[in-house]
Image (cartoon, rainbow over all chains, first blue to last red; front, side, top):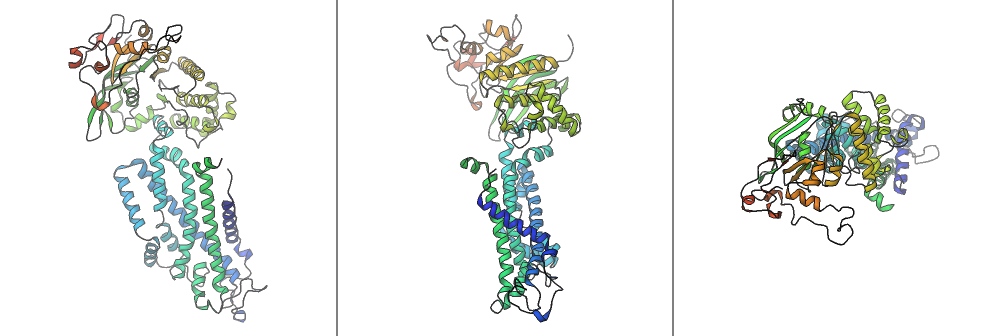
Length: 273
Length: 326
């Protein structure tokens, strides 16, 4: 497997984000919430305050570092939920067909027809703000693409000799799905999942910006942007750094997704070699 | 001998029904295979031999279905078994190998794993035991260095090796019947001979009966004791494989035999053309009335176009369905 440049750059950016998220307490200079000190309010970036400070005198660098935890948790967990839902529905729909297939297809079309952010907004409105409801809202609204891919892969894989052979050899339905179908479709699912993760990070930022996601004073990149919007002319560093963090993470995930597609897609692989 | 045959097919009819059309793809097919016996089904593409095999293991899917007749495995009707009982039979008592060893193996799973899965699935072994048994199974099909090969993926193996792996999977649970559907069509002629030899020896050692399906009359006659010739969904002649070449009774069989090149014959030396059977197999939707071979048959008369021939039992053993059999 040869990784392309974009996959490497994307992978490094994503790995960096994960690293920052994992080691946030050690990397941060001050406590992101309690480390307020009005003596240092609205300091521009300097050697002491790398990313500057906000109106309460909290270190923006420390808040961005801690924000990585929330953004990545939301991105990874909600996309995992999406993948599990999408693959389960798509795989079973493609495999069994019949009314179940019609039902899942209808549901997928319904999900695609409603803008997922609006749908997530509605769910958040019912559940109230907070990390858990954010995970539920984003986890339930973005599985339609995964579902489509899983169903399409199942339909094409189902007629493959080895799936037929497995049936002839006495495999049950569940065993066929798990041992024969699932491993043969992980490539596209991973690609969609990686791209979806970037989407989820953005969606979290949007919802938090709208005040429905993570509530201040807890640092999430979206909520930091939301708080900073009034001072964008007077203290631009308040919005630039969280924005940059979102930008780099999502860019990294998208590059990684594209790069993985090149590696995992057998057709593009044979074209290159 | 009064023992029940291993598998007995009686008057099998398979219908193709896609809502708009309703036709019998296979009709009046009967044969029996005893324990350890070898039986071959020969016929052109589309004559119904493969769907007959699928019916034996209860795997016909819409639009195909068994419309009439009986398939009994050890005296038990296969159609009457529950889905779970059928699954327990498949791979365990009745195994099957396919034409395309390239596609019949899962590309993302090591071959050893795929063999081991059979022991886990049907024999209730632990994965550790099963992995051991998989190495033995590969050694049995004469794959060199089996303990290293088990970790290989299908794309790392040659066609012949893959077909050996398929045989190892099929014979893993010591089945009573092995269905071989065109097992060597995709292989080189030399590899073909090795694979056939291997399959025959292994089955003989274990007392496994073989149902071999092929378009290659010579190959089938070489492996099997008895041969059934199928044409357009019917068995037109069933004979001992020695008799087929010596004195076949049905004009279609005669055509097949004549179309085989023979060593030293004029055709093989290039001095005359190989004989062929004129015309093509009729489409499943418009089988001719009467004897289905009549439009291509040199002996056809009025009766052939009007009524389908009954089964005639031959004195020499075997049966034929032709109004003008030899």
